Amino acid sequence: MSFDYDLVILGGTIAAREAAVMARSWGARVAIVAPSPAEGWHWAEDEGLWSAALAQLAQLANPVHQACPFGVDSLPRSADETPSWSTTVDWLTHVLAQGRADYSPTALTLLGIEIIFGQAAFQRQPRLGVRVGDRLLIARTYLIAVGSQAVQSKSALPTLNPITVETLWKHRSTLPARIAIVGEEPIALELAQALTRFGSQVTLLTHYPYLLPREDGEAAQLIQSYLEAEGIRVLTQTPLQQLQWLPPGKGLQVGDWTIAVEELLTTHRVTALDTLNLGAAGVVWHGRGIPVNQRLQTSNPRIYACGEALGGYSPGHLAEYEAAVAVKNALFIASHRIDRSTIPFTLLTSPRLARVGLTEPQARQRYGRSIQVITQTVKSSAKAQILDQPIGFCKFLVRPTGEMVGAHWVGVEADEGIGAIALAMKHRITLGELAFQLPALTACETITQAAMQWKTKYVNPRWRDWAEGWFNLRRR
Image 1 (cartoon, rainbow, N blue to C red):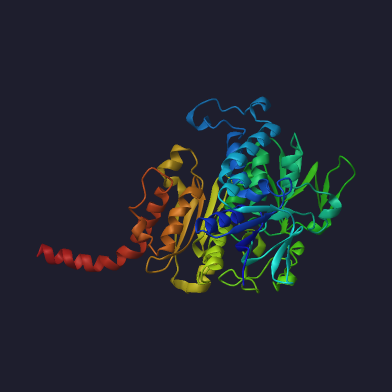
Image 2: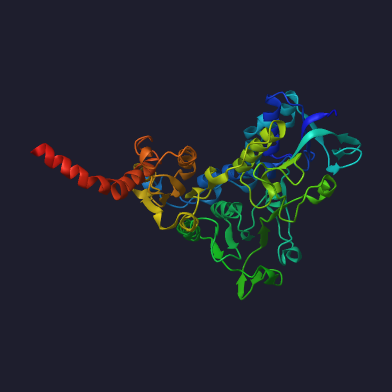
């Protein structure tokens, strides 16, 4: 049986493009079926880069001069000193164009990857393939790496006509003076802080009891407190089904609360799977995504899925890791298993939040009372003091052997340092072994201090009695 391609990838996401580059580097014949550039190759396909760029610009646009801690003029900036939203959008567009230039359609075509723009749909007869317009693409294996799109389908939101991040980014020259953001995704928090620093009054609405319900409780509470200290109004346990607009100019009714806002923005997104005709390919799916096994195979073993196609929020680096595993299984022997336990997550607020592995309740449920908790404050780091950003902590969840099963870090450059912890966890390097492997006067100094604290608290007492006997012997 002959095939036109070794692998056909559905989607225009960064994970899809990196999967194509990887497969092509091994000599595979690859095709990508993606939305047209006008529909899909935009910032939403690289949300991580967009969020990072916006967070950095928002840091510079902070209403208080960055030099204030060093004795320079501490008066707030004037409106003229804060970049306009249109200027910000132009800069973000430039960053997106340059940041992923190696994965542009032109660059991929030069590598020998065929790019087909259009709507893909599986077809079973006469053979399993993907129909794109008049073409039927026959491949040995397929990878579903489609992205998500903004929707307005939560609770009463459709009747409220909320805007989306794409609307805010593509079609507006100025920011609303007062805006409410509905969403518990990380981008909702990042966007709330950024818009506040650009001069908008922001209200953040979530139906959860507190922000970031999947993260460490102490870390989530600290981030929420910091956002509120910057002027963001956070309304938790919000009855989203009761949202309704008041008469023009009067604001938004949220249960018993009245909020003076001009716009309502939703960050809710869904992955468009219904157009792929997955049933014809024998792929089981539901509204939340596509179930897969540990090898990322769907119910049809020739079809793999990764990233947002699996459902839920999928950070870009996690989707790229899943794509790499899927490609190796699709092109060779399907023996590689997914392991997300050492893949870090970062929240690009200020201060940063970074996490890898289990939370404390999860660790105690799995390992019981043997779990040791080490918490080191960021303020003891020289780098934090130099940058005048002493807020935060680093919490390690450690087994008696020193093996780390989870780490949660809130503070300056946490997103840069979490990688060292994740790598150590992957290779089962103990917390104690990290003590002298990281440079001083960097954010990673917090890790070193935590390692020394663990040694002092849990390791040294076991050796103290033996050492005391040894010293007594030598004295005699």
